[in-house]
Amino acid sequence: MTDRPVRLLIADDHPVVRDGLSSMFASAPGFSVVGEAGDGAEAVRLAIELEPDVILLDLRMPGMDGLTAIKELDRQGIAARVLVLTTYDTDSHVLPAIEAGATGYLLKDSPREDLLRGARAAAKGETVLSPSVAAWLMNRVKAPAPQVLSQRELEVLTLVAAGNTNREAAARLFITEATVKSHLLNIYGKLGVSDRAAAVAEAYNQRLLTPPG
Image (cartoon, rainbow, N blue to C red; front, side, top):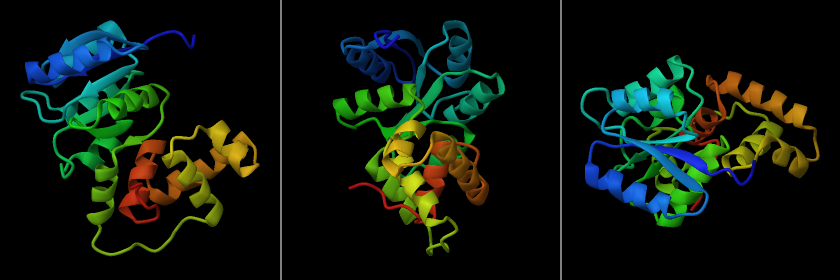
């Protein structure tokens, strides 16, 4: 199972970008590019047909844009993880994309290794945020919000933001995996979110966590 390559679907309206990403991932060990899409509607159709593990998705596309595609993928119950790739770290769709169900948000000009690492992490369901995006999420807040999480909840969320699984977080904090899940449910409720990626994004947004770098 660990030897199975990560199946990728690349969705971007620029053929040059698609070709570049496709070549990069196809030449990297552990990846298989199963399809390419030029807009959101095609991305949704191919996701249903090809069942990729990860969809590398641009937000700004003609017709059905990336944000709408993310919502449609969720509505269709598509299991693929969505990793948003964009040119801009100040794109107003960062939070909406993550709240809609995207696993992460990276910049297209990120180093090759960061993109590869991000896609692998996304395939595992781990949160992926580039440092500049995390910083933007924090800086967009006009004033610090009051701390609403307990110290233990902050510890759990900090480990999650660093890419730790529930099991790894439990081991680091010397608590059970069930306790970690319980803390995460409390965190979701307090922050008004429904998943790990959105919780991390909202924690940066409220300055409860400090972005890396």
